[in-house]
Length: 335
Ligand SMILES: [Zn+2]
Image 1 (cartoon, rainbow, N blue to C red):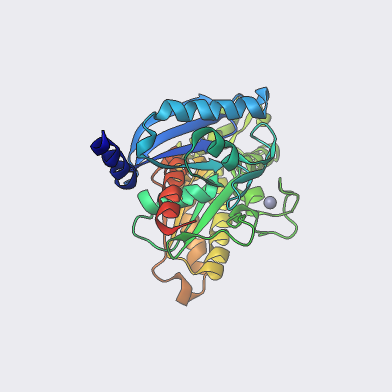
Image 2: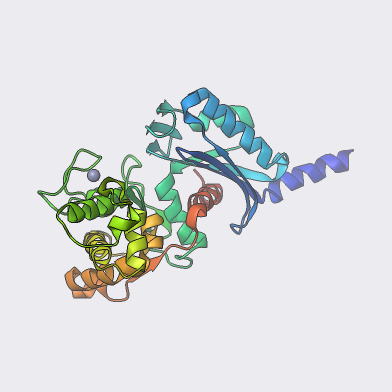
């Protein structure tokens, strides 16, 4: 009996080799059990059902974590990636409009009460940056910037192997650089943000404007002759079929993304840009050439040397794996 107790103590000190990673999205709650090398051993995904309210969503998060593992003696900690603004030090979701309208929700304290394991929280795009840096396109690169281009544009900055969080934990809002002072209105209230110029909805809007102006394109047929139905996906589809207007619009988005990277490079002197999200991955062949050319043309020569721009590798798992990396970082370096 005594030996067994000693053995257990030894195990808890030495064998906490697993991490539970949680990715809270507006539509899905995803939980994964990961090992220390970033391998996903088990995964669970469930609709968030945000309409049922905050407490129902929270109960679902807890249930999914329990479903991921019952062997708590091996769990080092729980990493949580949350959308919206997050206070990573206090573990509070300050505002997540897409997640049951969570405001000032102390997710770390609530989970630690329920689960008796240390919990670490980060913004989902920041954690995706960390995930790509540890386990994806940025393996072995100490300085990188991750940009996700989908319905919005977000990102994360890894500087000298650590997430750069800023004074409040909000750093990395790379989609809200103003690139056009008299540009279109952005969701954030500003005008001419990168997001308002190059995210999926901006690409779709540019296509609709061109079609209304009478430009010829097979996007008309792809949207059943209803210009209002043109989406970013239709633009990419048409570009793949060789449509000149669709390719022109994606190249224009690539130009703005390139300008965004130029500013980031001048501010952060990074080594690698990792571009993820639906627009970047699906339309890569059509946006990358203009991203690359713009970056080369506008970046100071001394600062553009040896900088690579590559597609992300982890897809939807970047955030989960970043949440796992966050736990490993905190547990090995102290809070
Ligand atoms: Zn904005």
